Image 1: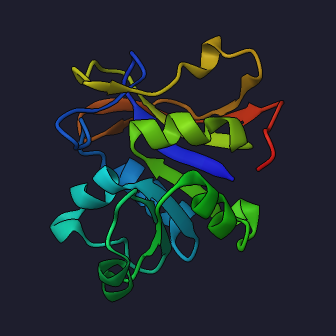
Image 2: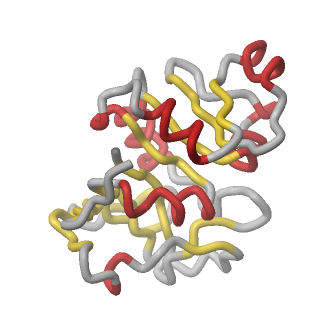
Length: 170
């Protein structure tokens, strides 16, 4: 299992339940990595999508305590009301096909179970309200890859990969 996201230079990942930057290259990378795969998110992330609809051409699993199972079925996503249900659902899929896609609480909760993080670093301050764990400060995480800097809609970005040396089983 892996997480995929972008962050600013302060490890900020969002504000007002939205992304801080519009990054076409990063979005293309996200699509390339997740199409045909399983995306796992919290309810706020689902609600932040256009019309609150799940991502197309992916299996969407949403952690939503008190969520509406009938609506989930109608909208085309799998609803997990708690972590036990979420882990039970995730176990049905190949771990390399599972991507945690937000929000902040979901990333923080699931990070110990992730083998890697595909992180696009943006060399800017997005004035974030929510933050990702600083992987450079966590002893069991290390960066294994970093692309050359490139421009994406006026921002300098780098595609990086971090690996977890101590993945927690679920």
